Length: 223
Length: 284
View 1 (cartoon, rainbow over the protein chains, first blue to last red):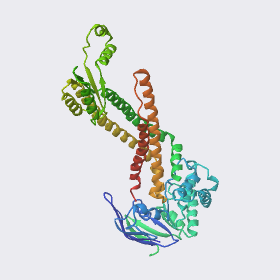
View 2: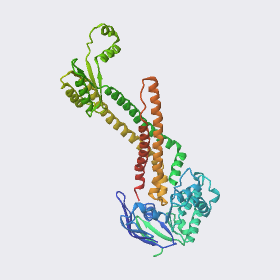
View 3: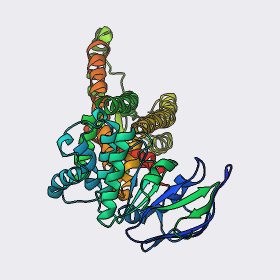
View 4: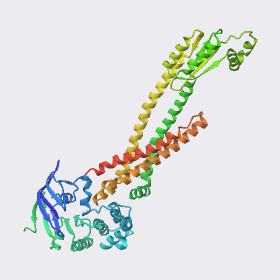
């Protein structure tokens, strides 16, 4: 599914963000990626989403290798891997439904199927009643649900999430976490970056990968 | 289809931004339009003056009609000559009376007609250059029955200097105007695209193909260019009407230029949008 082999990422001025990291995430697994800020969590997610290339080593996502993929065909990876951000990254000035429909449209879904599918996706994340609301009028938790619905639009096999509860209160966080577990229970792998150890403790079924200063220092599966 | 819908939607969603960039494109093209209007009229004025360039071959009074006919035929057959017109002594006198009414008395009281008969040689447009004029004048003066050949040497020289100045200013100023317009249009569209970088980013994030992302922006650029072109057309036309009404009779630029400019506006809009969006699609 996804496989990192001796992956390093070095930035010209900042130095190493990731150093010689290897791990394998099989199909359907739920894994937390934890560590202090600056430990390399976001860099790892970006590498898996192929927003950047490793300076050494190889990232493999389904059939695609970071060493071989070109800018022009990177969309193939993006449609198989959803991404959820801490700050949601929704398009303001559009409704929840439009934000989800937008993704379906730009990835070539036939026009007739766009709206029904967008409705279904919003229903999946429990937001069907708010479909017509402008996203900037929604609460943080609701906005994150829209973002998750959007990430699910192309039926990916893996969901990446970068501190998805970082901007949310206790209750909204719990709702979002439950949603991620639901999604995982339906067979989708989840790789979630979080520095919140409390959160990890509440979900002991998840695998834990800990990064420190760019090094992978702990993997609950090998412990 | 999606691209077209999106391009129109952009106008709806951000009317101020797209309106402003169209207005900037319009003003930039307006400058080009004014320049085109001015240089086209300058060109017309010069051409009108140039048409008056002709060679007058004065004939001796004792020239035989057969000789004159031959000269008329020979000169008329030269490739640069449009036509040769024979003016008899009588016609010359009538013309003089018409053109110089103050001296009409003098001409009518005089027993003898002092004016010579002549051949007026009209040149084809494009052949009214000094070397052509001189060579034909030389040929004409070689006839034994020719008294004198006149063509306003200084006049021809000055005209050619004016023409050259006109051509150089047109090219240099025109290129300058066009360059400035290009920079302004490019910047306006870059701003429009920069304002939507988040949308572009999201599209890439969810796996839209680059071509798919690019298309609505290209169309939007073309539309902004076209709208700007229409605006420039209106402004230029208004200026033309104003100048016509209050200054002097100027001519409107040819329709083909207008259509060409509109097409160029649209094409250039699409092109600058394409260039502006490239930087957003370059990274992985």
